[in-house]
Image 1 (cartoon, rainbow, N blue to C red):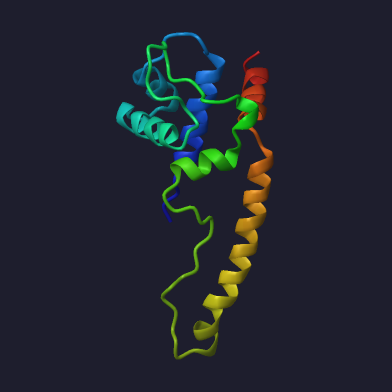
Image 2 (cartoon, rainbow, N blue to C red):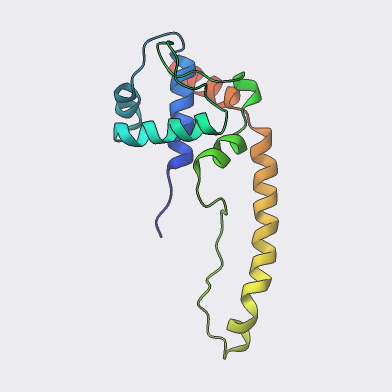
Length: 140
């Protein structure tokens, strides 16, 4: 199974921008920190601009948050950068001739929906500022 790192990378970018706020930061600087290609960084930034998390490019030395880090939640970031926003996926290829295979999909779908709602509720409670503070504490 392939895992997406978009959320982690997007949070990394935002934390970097907050910790080094006011300094000149390029997509190459961010890419070096994330250990990713600068084009991926620019793509994630564009998605966060479109979602209203970051301000559109201006004369600032680096991209800036469009609102306080206390007002940006992990769910905001997740919704901005993840194309498929379902955490868990039901296997759509099961044997329809088997009683379990025929009935597992709708039951798992309901259970996975519960997990999704719980995860989203928790992500709504975690702000970017909380993560920035945690990283800053570890740096110091």
